[in-house]
Each structure stands twice: as C-alpha cells, then as structure tokens.
Amino acid sequence: MKNVYSMTCLAPTVSEALGLPVPSGATGAVIAEMAADLRGANRVAILVTDSFGEYAWGLWQDEMPYLKSMHARRSVILRAVLPSITPVNFATMVAGAALDGHGVRTYNHDFEGETLFDVVRRAGGRSAAVGIVGYTGSKLLGRYADVVGTAQEHSDDAVATKIIEIVEADPPQFLIAQLGVVDDVFHAYGPSASDVVPMLRDTDARLKRLVEFLKPKDYGVIITSDHGQHDIENPTPQGKRGSHGTDSDQDCLVPCTWS
Image (tube, rainbow, N blue to C red; front, side, top):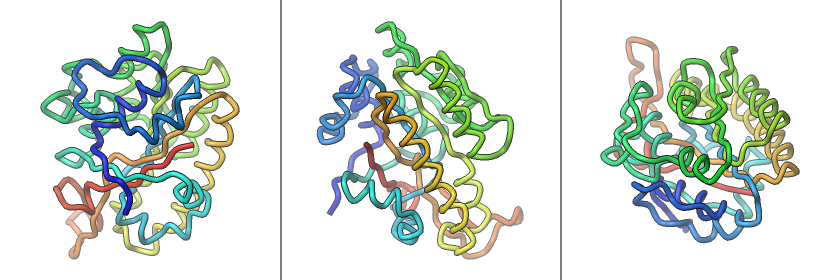
C-alpha cells in the first residue's frame, strides 16, 4: 500500500528540498522520502496534470509507460483538500495550508499568507508559474511568481514550450506548471472513457520530454495532480461526463512521483 499524504505536505517538502523555510502558514509535514531524493537539486519543478486522479491512473497507467516507469521507482498518493477543485488545491500546493489557511477559493482571490513564491524571493531566488491563458496556473499563480508563462494557445504543448523558454532564458529556482487540457478532456468524456486515451498518451510523451529537459538543468521534478475526477452517470446539460469537488476518493486521491 502506498503512503498517503495531505496536499498540504507538498510546499514544506519543496522548502526542505531547497533548504529554505516553509511558508509561515503551512500546516503540512515534510514527505521525508521525497525531500531526501530531491535535496541534491538546486531547483524544483512541479508539473501538475490537472484532474488526473488515482482513479484514472489505475485505469490507464498502461497507456502511459514513461510515467508508469517513474511510479515504479518512487510513488506516493496525495489527498486533495476540500473542496477538491483546481484553484483551492493549487493554492495549497504553494502555501502548504488548506482553504481556511490560504483563503483562495477561486483564481480571482488573493493569498492570505505566505507561499513558496515569497519564500524563494526572500532568499534571493526567482520563481515561475506556467499555464494556459485564463487558467489557474497563469491567472492565479502567475500573479505571485516572478516570471509568468502564459500559453495563449489552448494546448498543453504550448505550456511545455513556455516552460522550456523560461528555463532556457534564466532557470528559476522554483517552477510550477498546470497541464490543464487533461482536466478539459476528462470533463468532456469522463475519466473512465476510452476517448481519453489519446490525450493521456500525448501527456506521457510530453512529461518525458519535460523531465528529460529539466533534469540536466539541475531540477528535481515532481509530477502530481491537483485533484481527481469521477464519472457522471447522466451527462450535464453542458455535455460534461466527468466532475469533481466532492470528498470522495475518486475526487481527492492523486498519484505523485518525482525524479
């Protein structure tokens, strides 16, 4: 059985890996096995496959051989904080606190306390946030990072290109990126539908490309998700077949690996 940790543990673990103080309002504990592996890296990047929970991972991991090989070496499960939605849990990733600690319910809200962006900046480092225009990665986190990479094209390939551009120009000490199309496709078809497989195969290749680019740049790379999704028995009026936001394991448990 894999170890299960709260999403609040991610920020303290990144701080520990970088040798920096934790954000002042953080409530999570350090994930010792992750911090020990990442401690030799001078930089940390978090790549977030939005909405790719443990439920979908259990169904489709054979379609993602690169990610599966990473999980075979290092793997834990994170539990999203409630509500299990994107802005709340991205905020938790960088603040180390749940909603009542960071105060971010939507991507238009402001953080009420410190984040990894603040901690890195105070130590003289730089941070970056990357995402599709109008999505949490750029619209929320981009307001707080030193560098924002906004992909104008609605694609995760465009997000990957932004990551590479930013790192090649001047590698930030901390980077977090949202691969948001995963969430879009799961909402459209439901996480158990075979229609999601082409997207997942593309995502696997994209992750391989990014990890192989980032590691020689002295990055420790964490790959995880902000929340999961469950199938909807009857599609919504908007045609959605996947949803999230509840306290169910399908919505809250997400796989996490690192290199």
